[in-house]
Image (cartoon, rainbow, N blue to C red):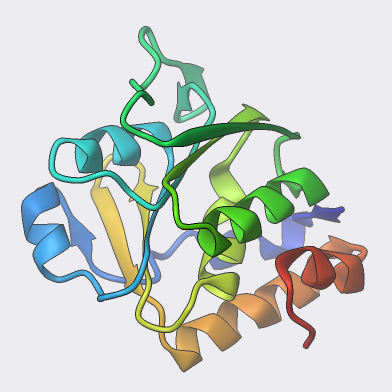
Length: 175
């Protein structure tokens, strides 16, 4: 549905929020809305303290398969989607939106790669929600969703290649 062009890759290098290495400290600074975890290592760390409302995992860290998959048994439900590297598939976007809409915790298991999922997670999460994603070799990035960061991520999605209108519809908003 959407593909990350090479020209936009540099825009994703800098973290969108502060970096934490301790999940309890991170959670103390989290917003009061839903908690969304993007990445296996992030999800594993957060599960030591709480169950995220939505977690997106792909069985990899830094594009290398993990020896052991994250234990997803604490989640109420698992959804499996396909999402090739450097893309955002319709299935991933819909699973993210539906995971946030339900009253149960959801693990989205991605066949492919979930690296870009923080962008639509921030774009669609309610104000006050917390999105946590990994910053390689540094820690976990905490993003408390406000109007500014949400608008920034929606604008970023609009610059990706592909069917932006359909992607926005899959997420449940229009620009």
